[in-house]
Every structure is written in C-alpha cells, then in structure tokens.
Length: 311
Image (tube, rainbow, N blue to C red; front, side, top):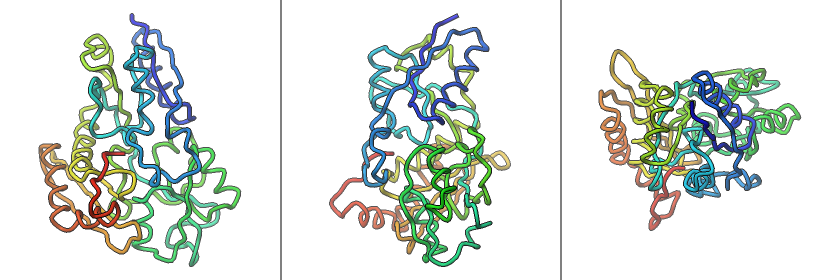
C-alpha cells in the first residue's frame, strides 16, 4: 500500500487528530508519517484571535507544504479551514462528527446561572462572548489563548471562574473533569464545522482521493456544508460572532444560526429546515442579512470594510 505523509499543527489536540487519522489509514495497510508544521496562529499566542484576523492563520503553512509535495494530506479542525480553499486544493473528506457543542467548565461553579456577579470567564471567541453577554451582561470576559491543556490549567490555577471550550477537543484529549454543562445550540450556537475534521489534499490527486474516500462521512459533510455555506454567505471571520449548527431531523436538515454584536446587546437568530445543504445555508444567511446582519457586520468591521473570509 501507499506511504502517506500527514501535515499537522503541533498542538496536543492537532496531533491527536493526526494520529487518529493515521491509525485509520494504517488499518488499511498504509505506511504513515506525520510532519509537524507551525502555523501563523501557533506563533501568535498573546493576542486574541479576533484581533489577528488573518485568513487561514491555522492552515496556510500546511497548505504550502502540501503544494510543495512535502506532505500528501493535511488534517485540520474543520472550523479552522476557510470556506474558500485556495486554488490547487480540495477537501477530500469530512470525518464523522463528535459532539459539536460548547461546554462550560468551572472548578467552583455548577452552571453559568450559578456564577456570581462579575465573574471572570475566559474565552477568545467573540461568538461565545456575545452569546454569554446576551444572557449575563454582568460577566467579565477575559481573553483565553493556548492549547487545551494550557486553558484548563489556567482555570485550575484560579485565573478564571469559568471557561468555555468546544466539547470535541476536551473529549478527544480526555480533559472532561471540569465540564459542568453542555450548552445547547439555542443558548450557545457553535462555530461552523465544530467537532469535525477536514482532510485536505492537492486538487486532482486522484490516487490520494481514492485512498482517503472511506474517511468521508455523508452526514457530517451535509451538516458542515450547510454551516459553511451560511458562513460564506455572511462573509464570516474571526472578528464577527457567527454561529451555525446543522443536524438531520426526520430526514431534513435543520440549521440554527446566529449573528450577534460582540457586546451581546443584539443577537439575531434564525432556524430553518431544508433538504439541500447549500441552499439551506445560503437561505438562512440571506434571512439574517435581511434582518440586519449587514448592519452588525458593518458596525464591527467599519461601514467601508469588506468582511474577510473565514476564519
């Protein structure tokens, strides 16, 4: 069988994901190597992601390695992958999704409702910040960067009363001890693609496409295609709080989506059902734009600015 080289970021979670894919490929007889590649997002650790706003900040250097032939495939957290891939690449597989929701972690407090007035909550996501502030405007939101271990350690050391993270990463790394609540999508709408892995290859690499086809999960592809279509319609980037969560219900996709101002004073929410993932995502995006999402985007980016692509 083939010798396959995987490009991956070097964080504990990224390597878990790369090793997970590697194990599945080895089961099929392939020889697999993992090359660790440091990305722009890994180098900038002292600035909130919303203030960086670099397109493909967690993917660009890995794609360069792909283009140069140093690696044969890249394993990404799908939510880090821009909705428009650069020319020369394709998304060959979207893996079966684990829990895409966000979770509330705290050492001392059992729920968001139980947090005292003015509690310190850690997150660098404007999406999470906006939805928290919408229900608890008294909370003080502080930036939280670093890998999963670092973030959990800062919570344990008392730097924060609570933090909000994705359930998927904590579950994959077995760091679930401080999870107090899994947050439903009607309260904390997740990021588009959260919980799924995206496998990227050079466009037209038919051999690699054949090797990796078994990794593609139809349900995950349908749901995340829908979410990413919404994100693309809104021109969503790191700076704007946009949430998107699609799931199959009774044979139809249901998409829940939000656009919110970072201060939480305005949250636009839309939910629709549909059979076609792209059409549903774009339709919900149009509905949000018609209800004022453009005004929120302009307030965040500036009236003359064009929203940059995800992330």
